[in-house]
Image 1: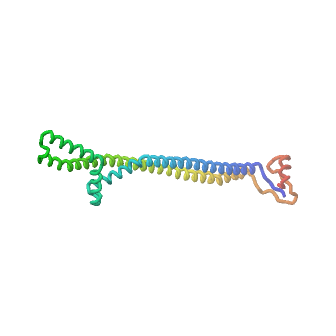
Image 2: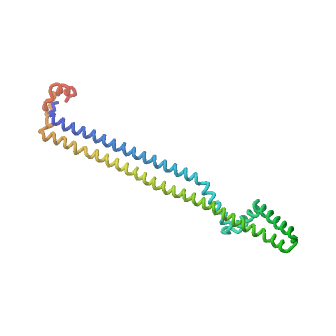
Image 3: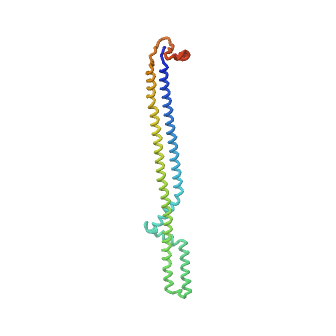
Length: 244
């Protein structure tokens, strides 16, 4: 077989081959860069979620205490079932604080009456009768106020978790956007890299044609190589080994 191939033809083919290799390498690089950016953004997402979980766990006891305190406040106010209010009041009345204050107060009233000689007077009986309800009412108000402090603490903790959740959501949304942009950018870069190959190959072949090159050659029976492009005897001999 005899085949004619000029130096210009080789130059055109070399340009096309180099462009093909370059386009492939650019495509691979674009894909690798997009993957790295995507992994980096995913790392940020995972860290944001870990931090939010840590904050939520840290504030959970305060949120739970605030929720329980609010429920007890509602019971004292009678906002729930009637038996719930009665149970809340009975818990205060039977508590050690009420019992201790009641005993101390009644003893003080009796001691004062004994010192003034009015131990069996009506004023003493009236004072004793009024003391318990007044003491209970004061302790209920005090308990409600203390529960309000816990409820406010829980509210602040819940607000802290909510703010952390909003911040985490915003940050994760931004990172997801970065992942999408990286993936899209990688696809666009790969498309451009491969899209430039046909034009470059056509340009190389156009250069060859412009130099007067031709693939015409002759295909005969001798199986030799015709040195149309002036490649030299050594190149002809090497190519002839492969039947070119």
